[in-house]
Amino acid sequence: MARMRKKADLPSKICSACGLPFSWRRKWERDWENVRFCSDRCRANKPKAV
Image 1 (tube, rainbow, N blue to C red):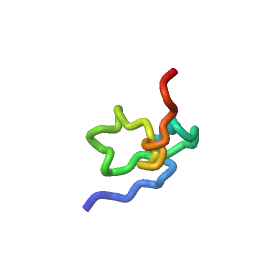
Image 2: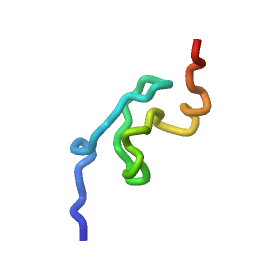
Image 3: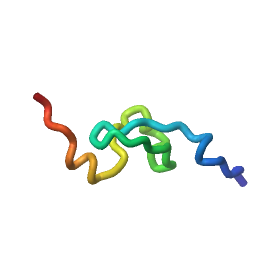
Image 4: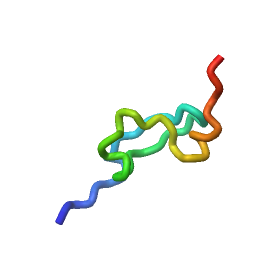
């Protein structure tokens, strides 16, 4: 059985929409390099390109 990690040991990023930090989640394991938003709500409200 895998050992649990502390949340502080996980990688984190800054959300492109709201600017808040968010931590790695297991569902993003294979696609972590492309994750830019912390939630579906932020992805839906992403800033418009000028």
